[in-house]
Length: 447
Picture 1 (tube, helix red, strand yellow):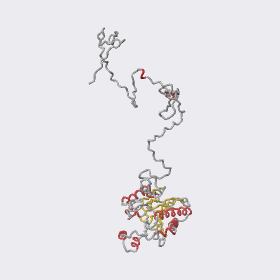
Picture 2 (picture 1 turned 90 degrees about the horizontal axis):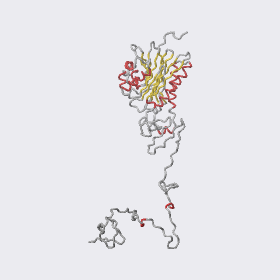
Picture 3 (picture 1 turned 180 degrees about the vertical axis):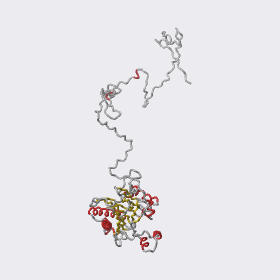
Picture 4 (picture 1 turned 45 degrees about the vertical axis):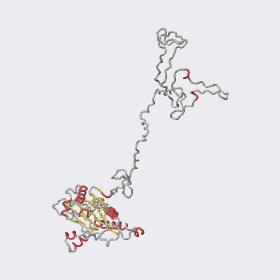
């Protein structure tokens, strides 16, 4: 067990209680009786210990002062004194210290007396881009075709989106055109993967200044190679030939005949493929199509055709009969003409739509059909492919399908007829042209 040491008064000391002088060996103050053996309570404070183990705090006596470096070391050379300002100072940012670094807290830079303002009307300086922002896709150049499905991917030359792979609708999937006196609509239908029909409508002036209006409709033969190219080439060639011949005074019926021959030449030219192409596909048929056209000029109604596309005459006065103006080049038509079947039986046969005449390099013999009519009343000519008349084959059905205001609204009427075919099933491409025929009174325009 430890023993507590009793403190005694020393010579020259004074009483802590009354400060009276004490003599050596006194245990109690003679004046106030203070117990000189009482020990003062120790402090609970503990010095802060530095990380290197030395105390960072010490009593404020001589031992807490900075040690003075000896003047000489073991080599009798004076030891250089180091001041705090001699130590290298580095800013936290890694740059050079300010002139007053190490002397105390850095002073804040003085605020400017004036701030510069932008000139009136000057554009504001752009703010720096936020690196966290997601960069958007660059704007595609003007004219770039974008996908109709994802609205962002570019469409490659094959017609598919480079982003999502969606097949794009072709330009010919649905086409509409209207002139002052004629209109046409063509649609891919609901079952075919492309539109193999084509049309051309136009107007020209005859030598006497009266108008001539033209409508050409072609149907590509699906069993042949490139039927869509064949129908397009035929419709363009026939239309260009008519626009060249009619202003020169060629009779409309003769001009129609020549236009069909020109269309046949254009389709035949498509078969002139390189020898290598024929070696790779030796069993492909040459491009082929059908054609039907109509001209309204000088009080005449002229039609021409090859194949099974048709033209109908539908009078404005529906009490008058509707008339089919063309005869099909088809197996069914031949059976009816030969008296071997009636029309209902022939068209119910699976061979009914096998055509016996067409435009193409492998056609048996080209026989253009043309006819001229001089109606005695106003009406419209419906020029169409079998994509329509399959759903309105009889003349009575066609009369009911054609709107009564067709002569005044030809484009609307063509749209209605295409819709009629689509509502019926849309098994084929559908193309319809509406060409109004206005009755010219006798003697009108004569001198």
